[in-house]
Amino acid sequence: MAGTSYQLDFEQPLHELEERVAAIEAVDQDSPGAREELRSVRKELVDRTRDLYANLDEWQTVRVARHPDRPMFTDYIDLVFDEFVELHGDKFFGDDRALRTGFAKIDEYKVMVVGHHKGKTLKERNECYFGCAHPEGYRKAMRKMEKAAKYGLPIICLIDTPGAYPGIGAEERGQAQVIAESMLEMSRLPTPIICVVIGEGGSGGALGIGVGDRVAVCEFAYYSVISPEGCAGILWKSHDYAANAARSLKLTSRHLERLGAIDDVIEEPVGGAHRDHYQMAGRLKMYLIKSLRELTEKPTDQLLNERYDKFRRIGEFLETPAEA
Picture 1 (cartoon, rainbow, N blue to C red):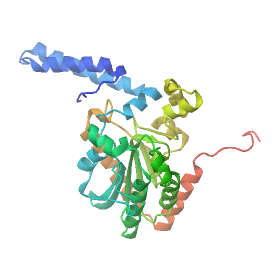
Picture 2 (picture 1 turned 135 degrees about the vertical axis):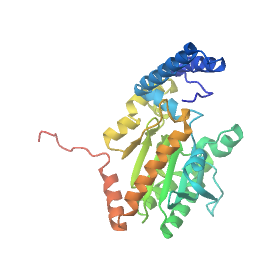
Picture 3 (picture 1 turned 30 degrees about the vertical axis):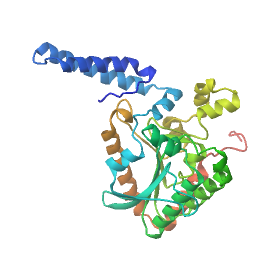
Picture 4 (picture 1 turned 90 degrees about the vertical axis):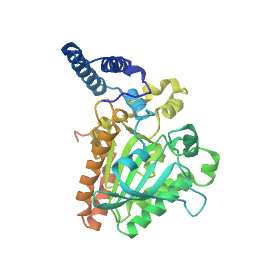
């Protein structure tokens, strides 16, 4: 289990154990005592990591979902897909770097991949607006998804955004309208669509590429109608109440699965995806291939009807008391 350069405060005991492991590995391990101590500390590290992550609260889960070492869109492109060819531009305004699209292969399937990218360096993050897409990003995604449907290619969407870009320019170019149009178009595209929240799934920015036949969330990602800070700002007039908002929003994968808002939860490695990119990529790849095999066998009419019915069932409520 690899360590990370960025430390979350609640992970401090784990980092202390990781430092102990590194210190023991740095000295001579020929003696039986050193080997035994190394095995003991490694076991304690794995056990404490498993216990900690099994009991994360909602706000801690949000912080893990935002971990800077967590694998991003470009990491999964390298580790999960082959022969990726990026496609640019919306033929209207520009090429949004927060929302990437392109042809790729996964196993024997040729697919269209669409996903948010936050960027890794400061320069790249500024170019990507920290994963907050503009209207031209969603228009680009729509055009590429329509092209995929034309050629019978399944679509895979990797969601990782705190929300759509909230600036004046984005609003002037029709941010809300283009997200609504994207959701409408995705609901009726005659090709399989798989959506996976790999990190943050915030607000309309996530929903803009979130309508699919399978919607999954990685174990320590979150998916919510609004970010905890945004919710706290509205209800309590202060971001200091973000943890309270996170508890109220029921935004973790466990809550979402229980509420029927998603189809699957993709288990992460012990200690989260940021600790083992390769293992996380392997689990995501297995899920995608399994879903593609199931969905590509279905007739188009059945696929569209089941997609429609799935989203119509989300948010059911009783108009009369259950006793009646």
